[in-house]
Length: 280
Ligand SMILES: C[S@@+](CC[C@H](N)C(=O)[O-])C[C@H]1O[C@@H](n2cnc3c(N)ncnc32)[C@H](O)[C@@H]1O
Image (cartoon, rainbow, N blue to C red):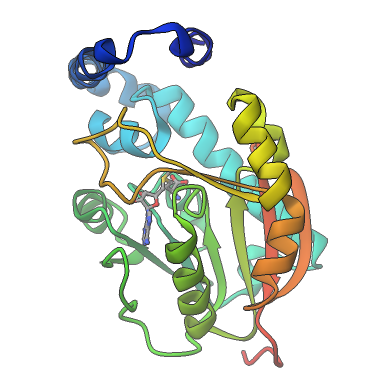
């Protein structure tokens, strides 16, 4: 709501006013996260989880520190991954080694624990603090920190399923191509990769010029200073068109499906497969 109002009034706000607004917003969010965090223990009892990521970590992946939304979205992500796999005639438990690429503080991973008897789960992220929480609190999976732009620690052909929820929504084009190549390296031949993107449904908050740019080129990397000091510089917002994804992602993978609003009824789900036979 606040975001929508901001996007509407922003063109009329004098430029010299912006740094002050950004500074106030960032500090307000820090204060807000701390205050929400004070009530975590009380909320925790209602959730059935013995522990949850602290409020600032929740805020970083979710845009809000509130526990209810964090849990609902995490569960929805797990459900949407499962129903996408169903369309391929598979279930999560049919895979033996699954990587959550850009796992953050485990918003999705928290919900797959019940499958851990059959599946080995792995998670990797650039956010060392989020990974440390996962390592301490989600012992059924193995977590690693990776650099923003260098090889993952895993050998070639390791995973039969990789999913990346809301990760390619943050990367510029050079990073995007780097990570498509790297994910292709670590997934097994015949293995499946699920990635989400901000497709046409998510363009509504953009101005006419940005939407026009997207219609023409299919890709937009939007840099703002709103989160300066909270997220790294390379971590911004990327939007995609379906045509662009089909064209560019197919250089690395076979595109099995493109499902508009396939994640949380908001982001688009891209279903990819590495060439070759599945080796189980
Ligand atoms: C919006 S959050 C989503 C986190 C998680 N997938 C979820 O759904 O809760 C995006 C995550 O991607 C991570 N990320 C961004 N670029 C990455 C990269 N190159 N390698 C690994 N993680 C990355 C960020 O640190 C962040 O935790």
